[in-house]
Length: 237
Image (cartoon, rainbow, N blue to C red):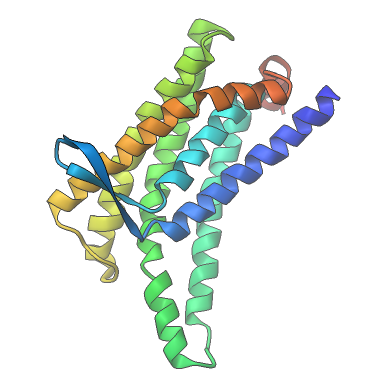
């Protein structure tokens, strides 16, 4: 029973991670705006954030659950394989854009919608590689210091710091540097870039606080930590 649950947990969390990652690349170009009951620095009484904010936050939830269940080495493998999958996504999108089309008008609309997604993928590549590996590293450094207790602390601390790194790198590259270099997609002014960074980080920080009980539920449901056996076995291979 426990072995079946552990295996199911591996598959389910990797599936959630990859699904959320792919969804983030496809939804990030739409900007969302939400009103706030109070004014924040930079953003004022509303926050603007990429549509991928929720999907991308789920990737950190999945990686933290995976880290706790199966260890640092296994989590880093998942993160770095996910990084490679970004290139496959980019290749599939552009192969479809460049392929001959029956309807040129529809093809032009298709390109107009999906081509700017290249900026999103490029922005996320660097942000993803740095922030996700940082998330795994911080999570396990805290675990080494606290033992199996205080899962809430390592979940919040690792996610909060890695999301800050991710947000700054992603927004700056996807919405400022890449459009300027590649020549397509919208290049936003610096005040909008700062607003996007603040808005996205506020949402991600709230999600990190809210998802902590769910991390406990997922870890408990899939049998608790297997780090002592699974992580050492992985490292020895």
